[in-house]
Length: 306
Image (cartoon, rainbow, N blue to C red; front, side):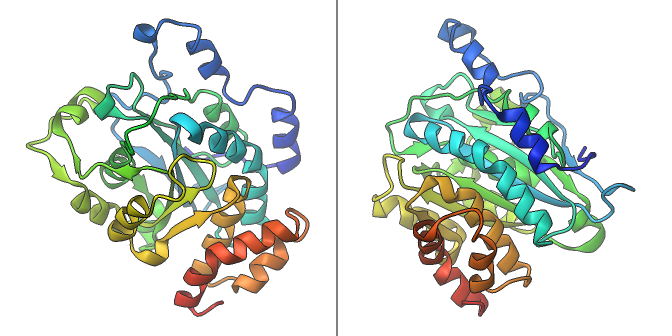
């Protein structure tokens, strides 16, 4: 997957006045027992999602955006959809990475019995990204301070194939976005039910994260607007899993796209933090730039680009 070319103006026109998540609107009219993932996003029987080079995109770079779609996080998901044009436009115009290919994951809570605890799109480079997003079901619910984030890392580690790593030994990117803590392990019964894969036992999430880290740069964003933005124990759990400088708290969820693009640009050595903020001049106001700066300054210091 991953063919076609991105056009920010065409994306804006496609999404203007449209429901962000048409499939979710339809499913919510059904009885809870009848709700299920869209066939194109259902992970059951999933082999791999592929980010491949092609004549059109000879140097592909995968970016996985993994979203908690429960409870108050729904507003963040809508905000990210609205900012997607800026994200792709900034990645391309700034040449932070060549030929970016985006894949979305969405999670609920398998431990709580959610009907649709995990969804996964294809890697795409063009307006099919929006078409895939319209098929995401927004689960809702929440309230137990944990969600099934482990499925992101399991899918990245065992169900993706990416040419950037396999051909060039370059890592892709995985950004997870959510305000609750991850479960401590991948449960074999849940994997059988959701993926149709028989594991030999439960897998500690630390092991799955390490497998994913071999091929992806891993980051987690805790956005304000979620119920647990100020919960320090949840923040510490993510820092223990990914590293202190790879976990961001963000005061304005509308800035998620700016955070992602600037993080990639800095990590690729293309920009300093100051240069990244300057490139956001036409996209966000002074207050937004200050929020991005405060969020990313610790990571920029680690990289030596503050």
